[in-house]
Amino acid sequence: MKTDQLIRHEGMLALRKHLGLVESERFIALVRREPFDYTEWQQGLWQERTVDDLFEAAKNLASASGT
Image 1 (cartoon, rainbow, N blue to C red):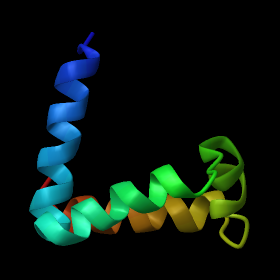
Image 2: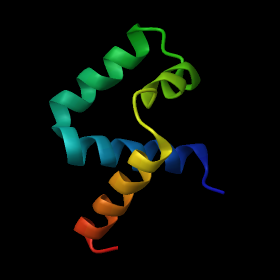
Image 3: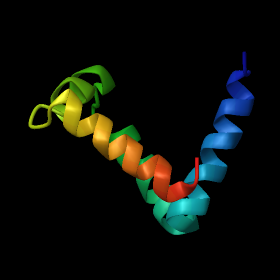
Image 4: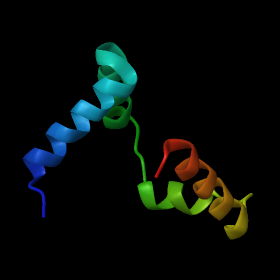
């Protein structure tokens, strides 16, 4: 199991890699400022998609990335 410190470090690296330094800081500020319920967000995230649609999208993504 990863330590909290390692998770924070890897998360910051991922944010900086994909968003850059300035947008990473903005993202963190947004998360800290606004109340956010991850579980509630996840429950509504894929309501418009079927399991079969999601499976096909995952297969296509894996195929495109060579996995």
